[in-house]
Amino acid sequence: MFLYIPLTMSKLLAKYNVPVPRYTSYPPANFFSKEFTATDYEIALKKSNKNKPSHLSFYLHIPFCHHLCHYCGCNSFAMGTRNTIERYVAALHKEIDIVIQNLNPERKIAQIHYGGGTPTVLPSSVLKELNAHLLSAFPQIENPEIAIECHAAYLNESDLQVLADTGFNRFSIGIQDFNEKVLKAVNRRPTKLPVKIVFDILRTAGAKINLDLLYGLPLQTVESFSQTVRHAVELQPNRLVTFSYAHVPWVNPRQLILEKIGLPSAYDKNRIYDTAREILLQSGYKAIGLDHFVKPDDELYFALQNRQLHRNFQGYCTRRTTGQVYAFGVTAISQLATVYAQNDKNIEDYISHIDGGLATIKGYTLSEEEQIVREVIETLMCNYCIDWYELSDRLEMTVETIKNSTSFDAARFREFANDGIIKMSDSRIEITTDGRLFVRNIAAAFDKWQQNTDRKFSKPV
Image 1 (cartoon, rainbow, N blue to C red):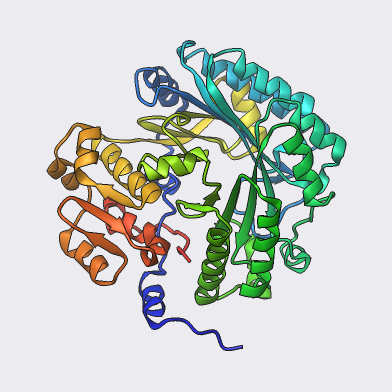
Image 2 (cartoon, helix red, strand yellow; image 1 turned 120 degrees about the horizontal axis):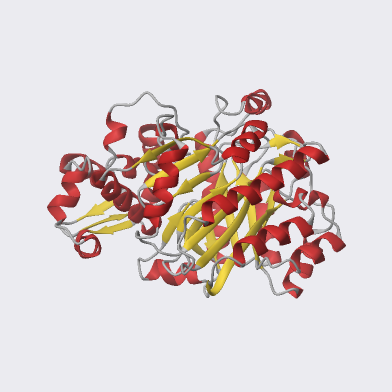
């Protein structure tokens, strides 16, 4: 069937669908240096007590999976032996002890997040002990977010009930697609129980639910993914995420399998997203950032309306719930006010490091100028708008100083405006509806690192 693509969008895709950073951090992780050591991280831990945000956000990386999906670009590993998993969990507890002794015990926990891999491969009793280790060491803000990513292919009713009683108040259910042909093509297992039952159990326990979908996979079409989104809407998750598949076979060679099956073109992938977005908006969900959709009463939507939406490595958050991120586990990346620090990527080496100290193998210290650039890019990525005078007040510096700290070029931004992807005045830059697809390109125009680099990135579409 012939798919009509409006000429203007066709030209925009041809011009702007080029590799750029995802900007979940600035600078991106492929700029981290091995010259940054565990000693540097320990010094940064102590200094972070005097930096803002003052709240604590903890991330625990559980790298194990029952099996590996072909599309995954995360740091995940095939299921280890019982002995390996027990030693890994013991290392997590040791790392927590090392880190928290450097932190002010009066600081408050705003977030705890478990990612992977598949965090729910661990017994609920083990997850409960890890939560207790952190929660017993610090006070918490009112209603902290304690979240876990789940693959429900291996969870029965009893498993879900015990998880819900473990202290988690938000569950991210990784569905990816309800079409079993798509799931089979990417080596993803469907849920063991009907998804409605999964939702009912978690809701009865008072938990909030994120439902995660992934578009741009083999065999997906506008029609098939629309059916998936409509099914998702029927379930009424609190938040629904439409992640764009990032094709990075140099990171995960398994993704080459998907090339053989056939990936949607950039045009088709854009239509898949546009149609999904329209269904969600018509169903009452509100768009947040690049890929999130939330109920109108969600605090993320209130933050967006007030142009106070924020993002850290845990995802979109509010100024209330954000914190400096202290990460534990293999490959985990801590995101402090002035420093990024990443742990060893090998499980055995990580465990060995923790027996003698921290497992940091690389990282990055941001200059004052880079901290300004990070604030500009983060503001744009979250709120689709930069109000120069509001930013000036927040950073307590002149607009000229902010612009000079970035690679801002008025001619380049006039080109964006002429292409219809931003609206620009002396006081603000606002991304248009068509331009939201290319927010990463616009962010890159502030990034001095991007002017001359040979590092590899995924395309925005």
